[in-house]
Length: 172
Image (cartoon, rainbow, N blue to C red):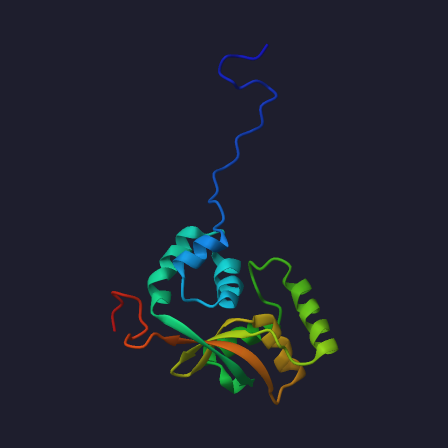
């Protein structure tokens, strides 16, 4: 006979509360002008389980658009900070990324079989070069395999016409 509190020995232990992952339909509503590839490869992959952080991105991305095209990828394309991070990650120092070694091996094997990457990068222009938003593994291995450079598709983030591209309320 179980007790009246509902806490008999066969009840499962309570699970800690976790945020429900955001679905693509919710993210599409929050980022209506973002291309599907960017939405999935960047926002969904990185923020679906962090809805509070995804909401914080809305003001910034409200003033952003994307252009699709080809870029010629060399180390010089990138900002000094992106180059530093590429060097750090290529040396295997990536904390908090599950299965990073496996991902490096898969990307390297794919590029050896198929040539330079065809999956788009996501890039953000800065005054000192391009910031790499997404595409770290393929860029690391692409630059190792083709150090003189290679052509690759990319989504380029640009400010919406008539805006500074800064989040609302951001200081100069």
